[in-house]
Image (cartoon, one colour):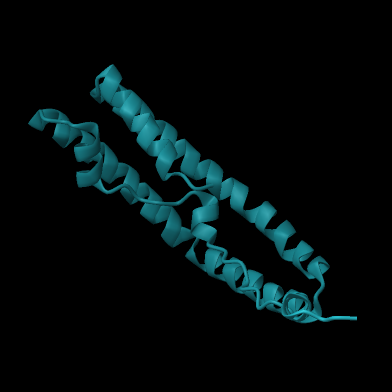
Length: 159
C-alpha cells in the first residue's frame, strides 16, 4: 500500500481540526445594562437639531426646550432607580458567573424573573415621557421634520 504525501497531509489536517473542534471555548458572559433595558437614554440636542435640519432659531429653541425637559425627566428616573439598576446588574453578573461555572442555565431563571418584574414599570414611565415629547415635537415640527424625528427616535431605541 502506497501512502502519498497528500493523504498524510489530509489525515494530519483532519486530526488537527478534530483536536481544535473539541476544545472548550472561552465564552464571554453576556453584558446586561439595566438602564438600556428600561429604555433610559438622553438625546444630544445639537445632534437632533442637525439631523432634523432645523434652521429657524425659534423652532430650535422650542425643540431644545422640549428635549431639555425630556432629558431632565429621564435623568430624574435614572437617579430614582439607580440603586435598583445596580442591584439588577450585580445579580445578573453574579448569576451568569455561577451559571457558566456550573454549566447550568437554570441558575439564570431567578434573575430573569426579577428583571421581568422590575424593568417594565420603569419602561412604562419612560414611554410616557416619550409620548409627551413626541406630542410636543409634533406641535413644533413640520410633517417632514416630524417623520425624520420619529425615524431618528426609533434608531436610538435599543430595547
